[in-house]
Amino acid sequence: MGLLTGKRVLVTGGSRGLGRAICKAVATEGARAVAFTSLHGGGVESTQDIEAAGAEARAYQVSTTDAAATAQLVALLEKEWGGIDVLVNNAGVSQTLPLALIDEADFDHVMSVNVKGVFLTSKAVLRGMMRRKSGVILNIGSLLGLRAIDAPVHYAASKAAVHGLTLAMAKEVARHNIRVLCLAPGLLEDGMGKNVPEHRLKDFLEHCALGRAGTFEEVARFAAFLVSDRSAYTTGETILMDGGL
Amino acid sequence: MARTAIVFGASGALGRAVAASLARDGARVGLTYCRGEAVARELCATLDGAVARRLDLTVTADIPRVIDELAAELGSVDAFVHCAALFSTTGGPVFDPLAAVDEAGFDRLLAVNVRSAFFAVQHLAGVMKGGNVVLVASIDSVKSVPAPVPYAAAGGALVAMARALAKDLGPRNLRVNVVASGVLDGGLSTALPARLRAEYLKHCGLRRVGKREEVADLIAWLALQNTYVTGQTVVADGCL
Image 1 (spheres, each protein chain N blue to C red):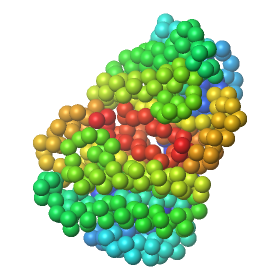
Image 2 (cartoon, each protein chain N blue to C red; image 1 turned 90 degrees about the vertical axis):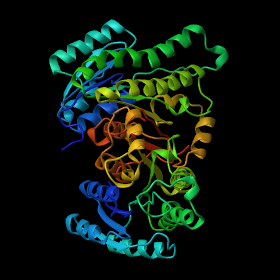
Image 3 (cartoon, chains in turn cyan, brown; image 1 turned 30 degrees about the vertical axis):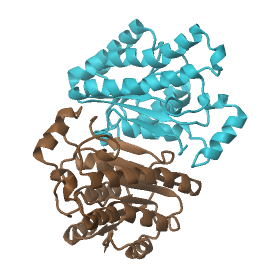
């Protein structure tokens, strides 16, 4: 029996990269249904992965910064599934820019997707979780929000905000038997890690105890465990998964 | 998926839950006990392929020998869990007042809780071909809470040790992490005075003590399935 047998899971930013791997991992662990959002639509591969693992797959083109559309999607899933057991706030953006070139619109955009999107989606989902006195929210943070590393300032700030949001949200909703966690990956093989300049990548690998970047699948497997009932006493934590930097 | 694991302190309340979780997840377990021979015997009878050795963790010279014996029986060691700890410098289930701690008691507690972990991992580094080490500590090693000072200091040492070991052993594909638990439904937590236990529960987000199985499952995941978390302390405290 899988870790997530019968669970109904919503993953934001689930059409590719880490989000896709998380969709696949939760389905593989027995989730009954997995819905994912993406900003630009698509996600055929995610749908195929979820269905291949035997779960119901649903794809929605929704921006997590659109409060009305997010609330509408959550209401739809609540009605048709009877509830959402697990939310993974994975959607995020970054820009490889030095501080001097980050303008106000860039800053607002990154903070909006990476912080406000997490808040809006969580708020929408929490209502049902509180009613049912059960649920788990997993936020995807980043090493860059925890350690002093050359990184786009707005991205690092947004991920640090996610860690703070995780703490306060976990404390507030724990009384309803809802857990809130944050999994903070280090450098991963693909996705945003692709934008790291070669000399920084070399430096990272030299300082990383395991001497390699992580994979989406490794992070997704841990994510599936953390949102499962096997991890029922861990909440409010940000867990760094960086290969020992 | 790892197939073999050694657990120090498996006859303790949390240790036996850890051994059970590891076995459920498919590992053959080699376990050590000090005073809990009956529990160890029961674990060997109920867990598939489990083997046990008595080991007094204050006797450093015995640690490599017992590890080698267990490794020989298991055929390999893919994971190691250090789950043995004294809560009090007196050895009993009491909360040490600062003034009551004497040197011999302090040394004994550090020997069991910290020194044995160091010398076990030092030896295992030459035995294990990659895998995971999980050291078990408590919430007082990472958060400011009322705790017996020697016990909290020992947990803090494990946290720092795991970070340095992770750096040292990472190139050999050995990962080292700590699991720090909050107040649980058995084991060392039962030594907390009632007033303090109530205070913990008041501040615990989930407003309940943890189940040993919940922490054991986390330890088992990190011991058997983890491939990229290292040098970390993962807290399971219900949001204190």
